[in-house]
Image 1: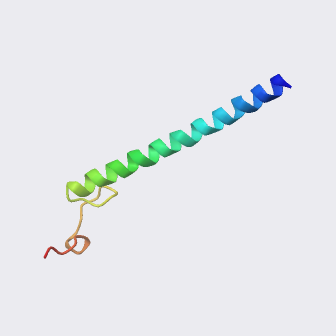
Image 2 (image 1 turned 180 degrees about the vertical axis):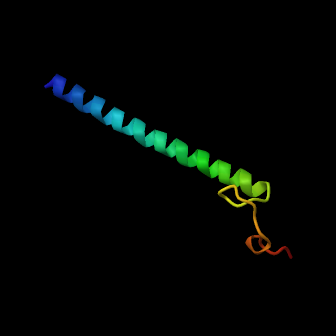
Length: 57
């Protein structure tokens, strides 16, 4: 019974590692997109055109 519980715990921990890696990648892409926006580019890194920018009041 203990071996079964240990195997289940190991399986859950390995699947959660993949989830945390995915979350880390998402945050990295979000940070990169925000950095691009701060430098006046689009979120994908391409140069922004005048219609892409918001008007300033």
